[in-house]
Amino acid sequence: MAQVLEALLERNRDWSAKIRAEAPDYFDGLALQQTPEFLWIGCSDSRVPANVISGLAPGEVFVHRNVANVVHSSDMNLLSVLEFAVDTLKVRQIIICGHYGCGGVRAATEEDMPHGLADHWLEPIRRLAKRHAHELSKIGDIEMRRDRLAELNVLESVARVAETPILRRAWGRGDYPLLHGLIYGIRDGILRNLDCTISGTDAR
Image (cartoon, rainbow, N blue to C red; front, top):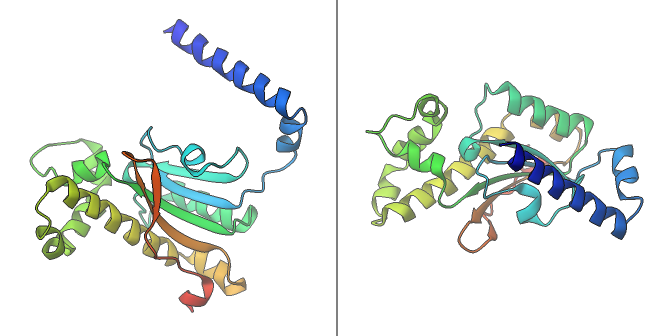
């Protein structure tokens, strides 16, 4: 185990040295302030790292991740991140990003298999599946059905964030931030726009 950790630390040192060689003042500038353009609310899946798939550098995106990028209206962790990002960091873009092949979405559709605490966490996705049962029933392939449910989960999460008092207050002061819904394809590495952007003007 110690060898695994040391290998990770060695990769970190190599990365830091490479960055300093390319831009000697990089870390000095990064340490002075945090001014990201984006808040990213995404899935905890290790294959979907926000900075990497969006091509953004450290300091450009403020990140919150949880299993299946679910937005619970009582999740104080998410709400604290959202409030800090909007009121303190003044982010101008909020992205809710799900992904195809999501294990959380799959677990939410496996009614006969227990998943411990995850079953409580994923309850909104099960409700969503029931609400859209007619549409989903028309999709014969189970994986394609789950991928559509992953898209619906993003759309639902965008709507939930838009309804928070945090966003309502921010939009009452102006049109930012913009709120977007994206879905990521693990098989091709492509982010897709679900065309559900909401602005302060839309919310009025």
